[in-house]
Image (cartoon, rainbow, N blue to C red; front, side, top):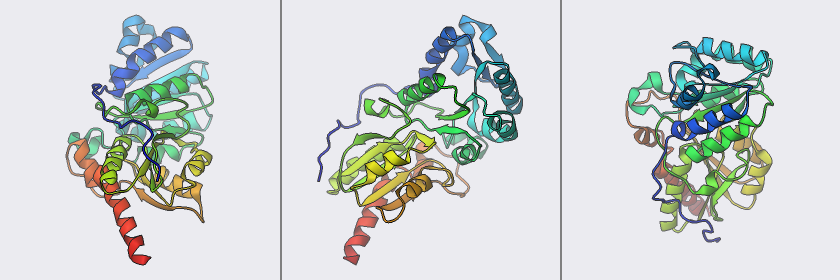
Length: 325
């Protein structure tokens, strides 16, 4: 078995929200590029610094997400590069038709930032939950879909997108500060998987908030005598299939963990990339059960995509294989 080659993820660095980390990045980008224009829907936390520097570079559509996307599409057709942000459940569902017809069909370079995707707004209940944002956005023509793992990863993704005008993109942002991950989770190109911990017994692929849970699971599995590799997958579309195959090649089991519905998400994309014959694939994801009103961490546990759920899935598989042997 391969021993761990990357330092443990525990850190004393205070967690930072993705919005707080991105605000100065977006303000600096607007300063540097006269074609960039920021848009919001009655939520300015991401763009406060843009407003402070030059209010003319920010458009507030009010609580009207469909209008927000329509205006962004119009500005893109006029030659500008819009970055539009809103709460994920309302951006994705209320503006779905505008995102598809106004932005995606013509392939306009609009960057959409969805704050609080998944269960990031846990205590606010189902009206603010968006476990379907990845599925819905992955169904859009030409849409690139990103799910950063922590604030530094979100900065890495947005910087990459601001330098790339090849078409529309959706970035799921968390609503609250996330656990701080090893620097390896935000280094290099976010369009490929990043190996955070090495090991030969199982490969755990995780995206977004579940990356921290995967590292916790790896800690627990080490106590069980299982050496788990953990990799973060930030880009879900276009899916880095070749890199995933290379990463999984020598391991007998791959477990995926995602805070989203399965269609269009990490699990099915991984299974398709690995094909058959290949390693066994266990996909952990949310489902259609009505979620309770609870803290984010409790909702991850409810759907079995927390550290304990990942650990239990690995141990159950290994016990089953031992009995079959």
